[in-house]
Length: 611
Image (tube, rainbow, N blue to C red; front, side, top):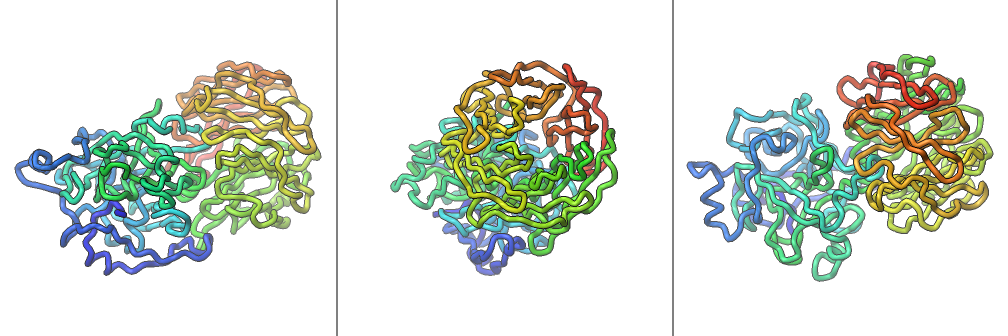
């Protein structure tokens, strides 16, 4: 079994294993010594040079190039990164996923001193110093559960903090339940993998960035005994490559991106990790599945803060909240609030100073029914709540029984039984489609009970909203091109279950769009909305019985990289549009609902929040 990293054996032995900075969050974690299982020579691979340009001669002599691929065009992948030693050569790939963050494989950087690394960003020819950017690394953040779960090289992810932001355009990372793009990397879809690695198994690397298309394979195939068996963990791995072999990533490509082309450009859903040899029959490349619920959530919580919207002081206007996440041992794990004045949001104030570690899913909801939204955190094992006192979140902490939540669950918060208290709802992302509920008692959680047998399977986007106006939240799922682009509803009976799933709109929020739920007009029924991410926002108003009537409400709100949501900013009982840019400006934009057929002009309601 080979990881796909170019490192000499002598150097591998010299690098000490180290504890991950998030160790306390994840419990004990084994020290990992990286071993590529492959003789890479005496030095980290330098790009091939000379009059051949590092490509033609080796390609002519090779039994097959990597592996059936070819050179990329200059500037085709501005987000591609070569990870190398400061003053030395390339040994792994990476991708720019935010201006200050590069994504790579954990086995490439585990135990290393950031000062020893140098990154070349946006360079196609590694020998062409006139192109791309060079950045040093200020911090290495390895996934806290790397090599602690089932399968080989599980959770093989790391993020590198840049010494200064890059000016190159980052690649979008696949998000499983927000603008779900799962349909674009289903089995049998061709994906693209790129890198400067070996041109064939045991062969030299290339100075020219190479690209190759590989088919995405089913998890069932990869888990067969003659392929990878139990070494393949479908929760965190995805396999790609022809069953017959011949096309693959190889040593030196580790950490690079596995990409799919979408309506919005390239999107990354995998990270080159490992495989048996290169391009062998029935031995496809195995990639870390960053489009999975658990891995995407962790990535997002390292790269960005997590914004939320809710009325935390009980004045009828929704405020903005951000969770900083940070290192679980050293922090910061702060929660900041900016209160709404009806038009804009005031200064950010610290309301809690130790909440929602990296990988936890934070949100807001009124747990005890006092009219003030509290903060929640869905962890890999349980659900935490900290009560709002109207000026901070120090009103008491409650937690569900250990084991009542799972890292693959999709947690949501709403009042499903109509008692005025928000409850915890868990959508299983394990293929079963189960929906479980833990009702709030105001001082704790009731038992975890199943309220639906099959709703919102993998790739769909589930939400909660009272679509029929009976004061009980119902479950809504947007299929997002997995099964058409439908909006499906199952109504709450208020006591023990959600009813039969019914299609309320047959074409709404296809893959790549960002769906939302809220009350946009003047009735008591929740509606649906979708952000197209080109400025257009459509609203589907509920008739309370069986239909969301869709219409364009604005053509000037929301960019492709904004975090898009809704909330009642001015307290008029109509939800408005809210966008967190989450870039270096970290602006918060708002467009107010007119309650009838549109939203007003967008404006900046806060100048720096939730970067």
